[in-house]
Image 1 (cartoon, one colour):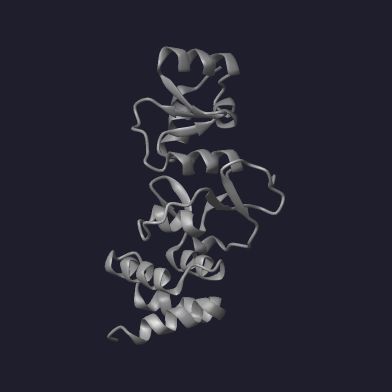
Image 2 (cartoon, one colour):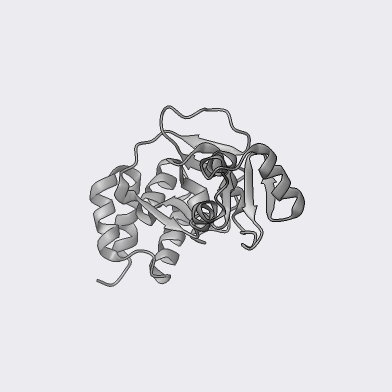
Length: 192
């Protein structure tokens, strides 16, 4: 039996979006999903991904689609996380996700990374699981984003209250390498 309340609870935490698999968990058959899409209760936004009509479309709809397709353990990362935090004007051509090593590799429009991620490195923003700001900075530093863009993103994160000096100092120790070098440069330029 279909449970609209259960489906609403699932979708509410994801900006109104849900996958076919999640709908099945709430008792919706493929035929019932199609029926509700035809009557306008659900909007089919991509193959296997729907949105409850009472929720507005998200400017990050492509991120929701990618995350729902990749599975519940996926986390928006790298350039896509910068865009989600509004720390960069770069619009990546693919949605970057950190996924479990067992995840399928081939997904159009999705750039999958199988890096390890600790629970404390995961945040939620606008209903999406996303890497924390320090982890995002580390990921883009490792991927080769220009130092100037990383410094600009770091400054915008500090100005926007998304990260503080202590978190950046901890990131220097935690991530090391290029990330530490860039963040040390940033911290030296800031008043204590």
